[in-house]
Length: 397
Image (cartoon, rainbow, N blue to C red):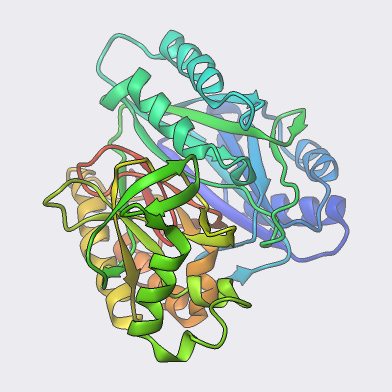
């Protein structure tokens, strides 16, 4: 039989009706004779206007499965649709894959305990024989502890599995998001799906942002807040460099900080000689500090970054080639993509071109695309990290 992936979308305002329309659109693309012979995973991406309770109700009335995972996000895309208000429902049906779902709570209060609990459950599931394992992570990005989650999971599980995912959001309001699995709906959690398969899976992360500043040492930081760079007030160091680099920002860097920061994020060096960076979005400044979307470790080395359309698009094809290479000549049957919403806000045309390139690499197989608040995955062979302004791609075979 193999593995089949399909997607359905709806922009109907009523959540129950939208779920019904989305799931039925997805089901029409799959042979109904396959349903009793395979495992099924349903992935639901919904924007903030929709109540997850009615989404789950609509899904369950149309498909018999105990494997439903989803979260609220800023929007989504498929091969031919981009929506910032609506519902996307994707179905993976397979006799080659096994699915194991989980929802861990209190992510912001105790991320290390949450990570250990999840890792322990995964360890109990993983077989001893050689198998490919993928962990899809959908954490609440507002928790500001996603970096700790990913780091701790990798410390516990290591490279025996691959990691991909993105942060849940609420259209940049940063108030409340929802994550859900089956009958459980909550906030401040991480929803996860472990996929086991003998078929290879490809993962990559890319961004295209380039350093423009000299290196700065983070001499004082806690979590996602940078207090000092090179023993100086962090905001002053950032402001002085940006005002010298771009005279156009002088009038609004104080009063409209986000307007500056969206074009000038920070990049954390992966190592002292690295040309690769983990990008950090800047949310705001408080009393001279810089508040980021993800953690910035104390004593790390950062640079101020910028980019243009050519730089951003230049990273796509190499990343897709690297992702396909991991499939060992198996044909890709679909992709799961987590695409940073701030990247989308910079250029909607960029997303359209990237979708076109992904479709070309897939041979037009289905794309499950999410406009996420931070992305989880590995840049080439590096360890998995929580990224911003990036794209995390997973190819199934």
